[in-house]
Length: 401
Image 1 (tube, rainbow, N blue to C red):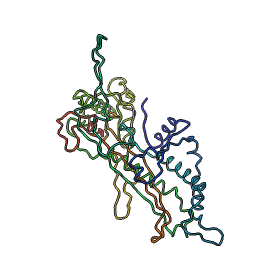
Image 2: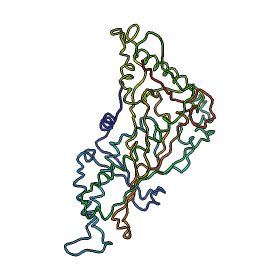
Image 3: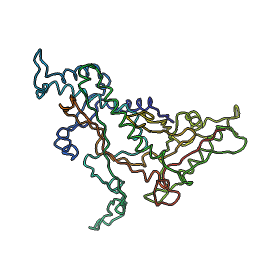
Image 4: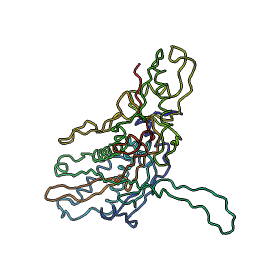
């Protein structure tokens, strides 16, 4: 069944797939310990999904305010070195942790719908692709008289690498908030961090796809056959694009690519033009198509991406740019061909503020990941030495009449 993925359906699908108990990983210790992957500092926590739904941000904010001001007791102001109680800290950070997790789950991050994600907390900074590609083996007949068996092998000759990068964003609370803005809502801070992370994640995959200059072997022009309606032109265009996609070669094996499924990345303005055509709902009534009903196209999902969350927002002196798919174009691709390696998911570091700057709290969020899009973009990858006809994606120009 064809599904159209926008922000609402994405959240609904994730909720359906969620188990009753969710497992998440947290780290304790210094930032250096965490980056080094010290297993003794890694803790996995399980909690019920319903905890995410009932989280009350106002209540969490009130608890936060109490903790930050715990040094005040009656008329006596304690030294700033005196910490809130362990119980109060555990209660606050436990709820805060759930709030970050909830917003991350709800974020319109499309990475997993396009690329295969591989998570390993012990990844080195530079990963050889051969270490994350499939291993291969062949069953061969043997006599059973101590003869050697055929061994499974990895892609030993593949020297392509995948580099990891760290991206981060931070927040510094200040005295003004403490004095005049008691409930400035930490929820906004968490949401801003998650939005920044979501934009960076989508830009690392979708942004590269949209910025690529596609070669002729991966471009499908709009059909312009005479005496056919817009639906007919659209159907023929997408059908030709499917055929073009299936004819591309695998960068690793040099054979025709495997196509277990096909997805379509587009602007929401074009969903109406694409959806019914994919379903094969063209008929003679009204002259939508010449002849009788046409079979549905082998495209399993439509993924809408109009722009990033912060696209066009002015941040300081910079205007942020996270453009989406241009209306009138779409991309047919095989999901899972691109690779994303995760060393750390969105991770939060917290610390005391600076007394000289009168900041009360400081925190930063970071993620460590790398992307490998060579197998997806193939011949259209910038700077590639591949000839024409490689990859697992096709850029399509939609007809307008």
